[in-house]
Figure 1 (cartoon, rainbow, N blue to C red):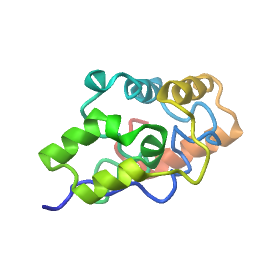
Figure 2 (cartoon, rainbow, N blue to C red):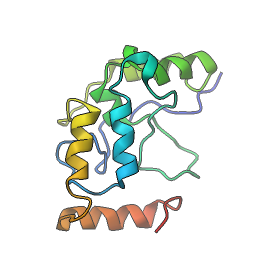
Figure 3 (cartoon, rainbow, N blue to C red):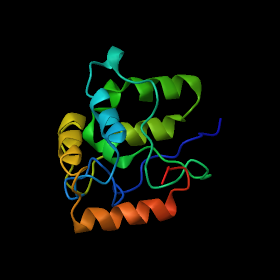
Length: 144
């Protein structure tokens, strides 16, 4: 069976909300709110895999978010278990997520990443504004 999602990239992308070095405020509050939900106990987590923000919704190449994989204990992710069970990913992708270790510093939880990100929504700094502009140019599925 072919996996519909590829394993995480070698490193979280430059706009990953889980990265400690990404400026605050580059995503909408709804995007940051998603991060906290994966910190819940396994039965209370979302059932959908957290995908990389780098590609737009029409992209043929979709990946599991490397920051998400590095921040969370893979075996405890309900979405990962369900995706394997229902064929959304193959065993190699499942194992890649479970074994993933980020080469860049990540926040220790979705809550920590979301709290950081939300602090800059109203007043993004220059680096954040640059990344917001870049995201707007590359993501055709986002409302501008």
